[in-house]
Length: 330
View 1 (cartoon, rainbow, N blue to C red):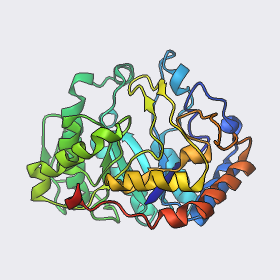
View 2 (view 1 turned 45 degrees about the horizontal axis):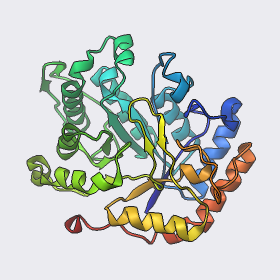
View 3 (view 1 turned 180 degrees about the horizontal axis):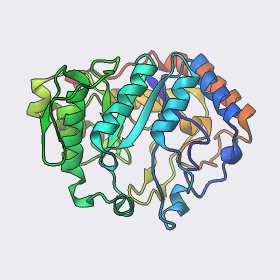
View 4 (view 1 turned 180 degrees about the vertical axis):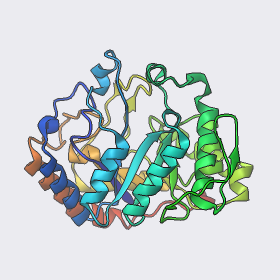
């Protein structure tokens, strides 16, 4: 099993929470990401929102850094750590976005993962002047156009939303292919992963539905024409959030007991998951947890670093030996 983390201070989600990192300083951020790297976590995930309507800040918080800029900061502060950068694809001009992502991968020596999102907040689309109802076709076309720029010596593309020809695009990403994961939980999202994706980072997807959704990806003709390993994520502890408002519906049972944590790792690995988030254990997750057995809340950067080390030393060595069920067993 692989483990990802968020970096405290890049957002203040959930908005209802009281966050020790509200006034975090850049030097503390650098110390944290370097310690994450030293402890051999697999990647950090950098979330994204350009702006918020006031109603949404109740659950989401108002503080969100620019994901591409923040990813560059983290990649520049580290030498081995992988950064998974969330990007709402329709919010960007695709040639500019392709250049930004290619540059990050080039300058980091091949340590970028792109988590491509379609977007879900009509208000944010209106703010940016992007047609909300066309976000799916726009995403598909932009991804195809960007992958051509990243891989072909003489890139050319003719589409409804973007066209180009006779262009020279350098530098290419170091990674060939540059890994592109997707979010989403609809049938259209599964088809998009089958066609373009190297991974799926689901949000608000129940474990009871996960296996069938993964099988739907594998059944697509576009995937069967280009079979490949997929990175598949699931939350370490299952709770329920409203996928649109992010409001808590059901609190997961989160405990710090080692065997209970490893049991959860084994359960999601049996469903095919290759990656999970350690955030709920580190105290930076989406669920506010005050149940018996849960770890006490973190009060400052020093305690955060201690918790990072505890999880890396106590949980990760055994958890890494738990392998995901092979594709043929799903």
